[in-house]
Length: 50
Image (cartoon, rainbow, N blue to C red; front, side):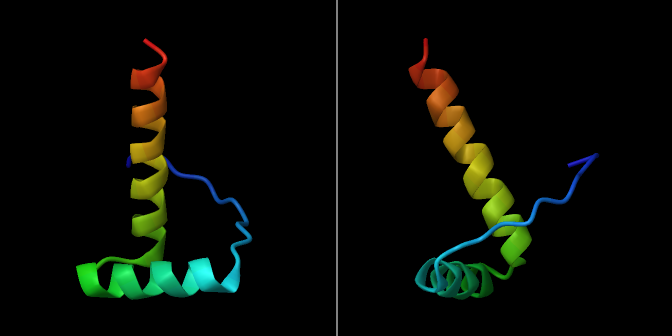
């Protein structure tokens, strides 16, 4: 990612805990995990639109 911006994100505690756990297991930051998950969702949704 060459450019970034900040966005305050509210997550249910259970979702945040799951993200923290999976990110730790993958050896990445929670931010990188969430950014990748959002990018993957956008790709799926834009592909489904065609």
